[in-house]
Amino acid sequence: MHAWVFVCLGGGLGALARFSLAGFLHRRYVGSMPIGTLAVNVVGCFLAGILFASVFQREDLDPRMRHFLGAGLLGAFTTFSTFGAETLALFREDRVSLALGNVALNVVAGLLAVWAGHALVKLFMD
Image (cartoon, rainbow, N blue to C red):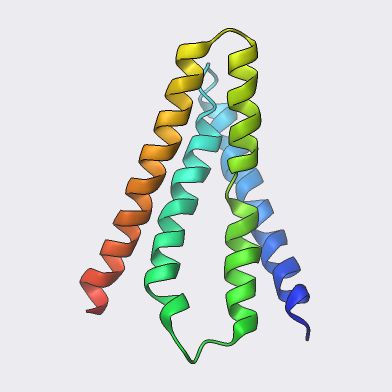
């Protein structure tokens, strides 16, 4: 099978996971901050750290599985395009402090989550 099939399969699952988690959080925590997108970005970054430190380092991994997990599953799950649109909406609504807080939280928490995922795998695999 072609690589694009694996990207599509992973993408479908990633999009469904994103839709489910973000929707659940947006419904549960109604408020000013787009918490569902923040959660998906942080979880996605954490999973990226895990995948980059473990799965993607394996030379014996079928390239189609890399496509399924990377461009497909994780690519569809993370939501930085949504993050950008929601942040712009906050700016347009003159909610500058919330917009800046949204940027800071997504970037800092995302980077910390990638580091934590990577460190966790290294702790148990090295």
